[in-house]
Image (cartoon, rainbow, N blue to C red; front, side, top):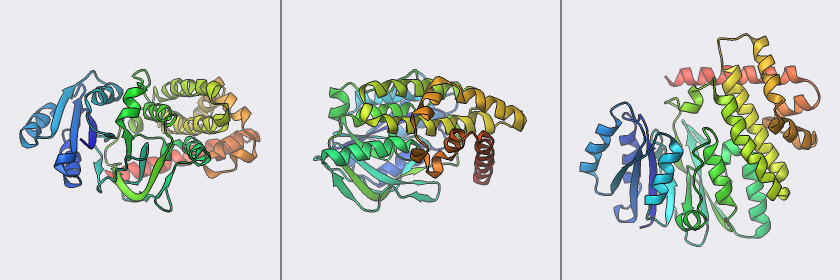
Length: 329
């Protein structure tokens, strides 16, 4: 068995068939299996999946407790393939995967909506220690771009032998936490300059729609990442950047996306979030020079005591997100 596709299925009656058919269209039936883990759906997902079982011989259906981490963990335990490929039930595959048993990780370009996310300028294999270290730090410093579990092939043996599972306690960034722990065992990486995965933005995910609890959920996830710095001092700056990027995400989604409070109230809430030790420490440890990139502009403004400029950026980003979502409906 070459590849095990693991799909958590929760309230996906309208999209799961598209996901499965995309895998079927881009793979040899003798080389892969599709593991679907239904987890607490309240729509007709279960009925749709039962019909699919009668049509496809290489689909295996399981049930888990509610939560994407519980579903993925069960999928990992059931997987028989050399490689694991995580696919969300509202996304789909757009090309044939490229497997290489001589590497520990295969990572592809991907599509977000109709836009091609060009991660790499060319396809190449990296297996020298310095190159892998630099690559891992780049991934950490730009987590929303790289630190996902989709659009990748991960070795089943590395996951099973090192008991790497998703943390069910984390409600956000659980995939980044999983991928960080997986990266610790990667000694070689194959980069593929070809879109493999389509990340859909026509269906609002839990992260994109939830607001009230998102801030505390991100703080919980970042507190766990903060602990990793103790055993990984050489990557402490990259981990700080990981934390600061998620600070931006949490503030935009949890505060500035809200329409029920004024701009002044948003500023007050933003300041309170910024005082949390996990964000305060990360900002303090980074120099102005290290923050001179567009994605760290809010932190650069915080560093030079121009917080109002960061708040304006957050407000503009929230409005852009809202406009984009409206255009997709």
